[in-house]
Image (cartoon, rainbow, N blue to C red):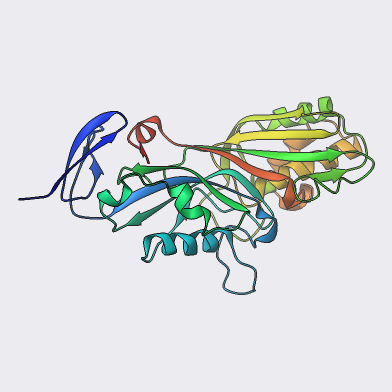
Length: 295
């Protein structure tokens, strides 16, 4: 007789067979032989890493490598880790979304807290937040529908020793109203080739920006928030760098529209420094979110 396990998942009693789990279209959890897919959110300070992606050279570890090695210690098996996307060296994340598969039985996850299990295996610069059992069709990279990034600028004549790792420093006072006039030309579907750095080939460079706005967090910190269907390599940093360049030169705000239409990277400004950039949120279709079960 097949072993049966009863667990309360999302306040619902579900009968489990074969100690493995999948999700039906109805959202009910059933069991089959195979791996269990785990989705989780992670925050990290990217200062001391070579970026998300594992590098074949150098002595500085990547965020991916560090998390993967910790997972392998917890689960005692080889882990292949996938994320919503890559972040560059020095870029931070408030809620990067990842997934992996494990051969561990469902009973392994009874009263299991991934955040707690990973705490002793990770450096203080990386923290696992929430985790879920995900449906088989979920993929952290492919399933993502849009993302939100944030860029912070410390706008003050003197550098802050406490914000050096977490914000760009601009000495000259910035005109936030002018910056918002520029940013509105980013909204909509455009070919953002002018803001793509070399290094990661993609099928096309057309992306949709849903929101692009500057806000003043306090007297000396400015925050640029941008939400889009996807972003090219260093696209957000190139957009911020270009806006700062136009503001400094006091170009007309619609100049950025001309830069977009030229589709020429040399016509845009330099990338803003990495330390000011944060991956804030990754969005997925509601039907997939509804099938995930909190661990």
